[in-house]
Length: 224
Image 1 (spheres, helix red, strand yellow):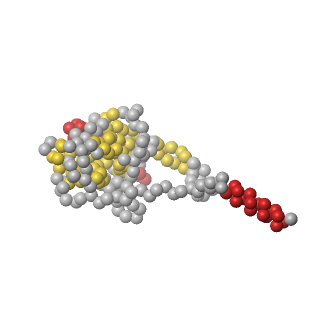
Image 2 (cartoon, rainbow, N blue to C red):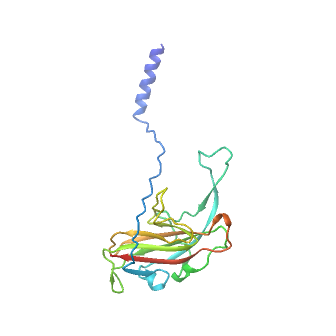
Image 3 (cartoon, helix red, strand yellow):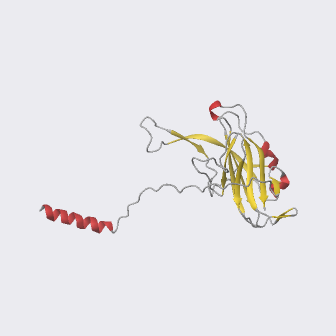
């Protein structure tokens, strides 16, 4: 009797196995590795904090303050943690809709934003590589986005933030009042598009400074 029941159970499992798909949680894909930008002087530089500079790429800057919001703790959290915290919005992600964000002029990247203390500000723009800027032919040049945000920044390009844990990042994540230099492409061509999202952070966070978030520099550097 017991052998018959076991055989029946195996038959049911084998039959059901053809109809049931068991899904397992997959780890998110690893972020792309940062690329070291050139250390030599650039062949040609465009200042994105000027109207002509941003206009050369068809860039229209938008900004929005990010808020700290409560969220659920991760499944592995210790029992004492009943809540956790996140930022909103996640405006670096691909496909994010910023159509209702206020537009700012290029020069207003230097405007002091936030109420001070612990503060986070998003800046977004879409850049299109032109065939020429002045007399400079962009075709085939290495393009590097350089931004320096007071006090910290994280830079997203086309919905991704290249980074590598355990090593100094030459690109998207840097320290206190340090420039972020991100290689957009080793060889651009006219019409190439880049979605830029910069997450500006007031800091040091543990000191809750009574200052603001603003750009010291924003430019595109071309190298040959």
